[in-house]
Length: 303
Image (tube, rainbow, N blue to C red):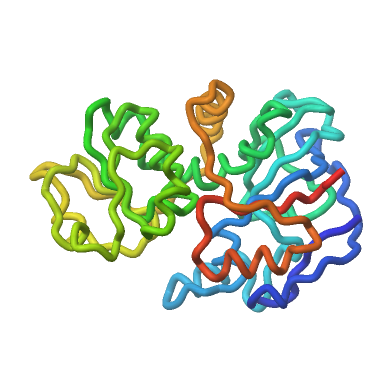
């Protein structure tokens, strides 16, 4: 089968589309999926390029491989069709459409992959498969912070970096929860997020951003570029600052909730572009340049 492998850390030139052995069901709880779409995320960028410095870089290499990725087939999140299951699988059956994430094992950039049932995998509708591909990373990361426990109807929420995959998801979820949301982003991306219905948009380079108003219940840094001190300029006295720098968890229950909202049309993922699998280096370069808007996907199976 075809797969994209990486034998050393680095830019998109370290990725190669090649032939590899097809995976096989090994355990009774294994699920075999034929891949349709792969979402290229900040997680892929950090693992593939090891662009993180200091002690975190050492930790990342201990987890993912010291000299090269331990799992050579790349891609941590995507969607596809179940083609085979182990005898004990209960969540899905062959023919079901699913979306998934498995950051530690990767393997999504391939014709087929194996996903243990205990990991984060969600059955979705065929009609929403492309949109659902965005849920396990950006939306699930955002929902760790922006959820029914932290956001109540009528709250004022400021999202820093609202045009990225996590930021646009946070905006979408916060609006769904009844918050008044101000989105901070590049002015050129205002139109791209308009369908997510922010109450207000602010150019991060404008005077409006440099002259904050202490009127927000929540400030969420979706790009890990802002300090608590910056946030305090926007927050009410008892307001709350949250940042994507804090580790998130791959939560199957939250993914199920997100899928329910998607099915009902209550959230609308932002997808900037869908690349073919033969454009994989171009797609990764787009990711690594750091200016993608919302999500970028690779359509692996174009049939």
